[in-house]
Image (cartoon, rainbow, N blue to C red; front, top):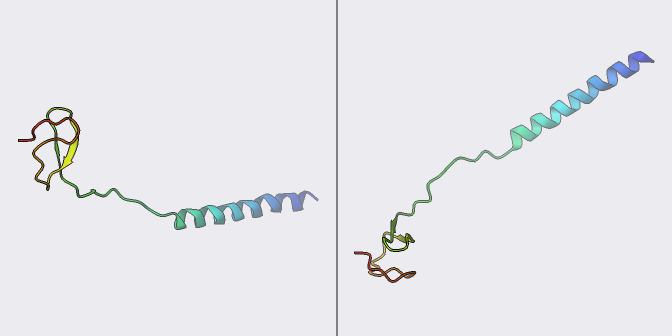
Length: 66
């Protein structure tokens, strides 16, 4: 009877190892990427605005960009 009890935990460990190995191999790997948006900062309020626009005034506080 003790022999059957010894085999079962080993089988359960193998199943758990298989599950964890499958989860690890199928987990999506993410890497950091740059958003690709260049911005300029308003001197008055600190709001970020797209750099490729010809804005003369901040939409948030009204300060002049240039």
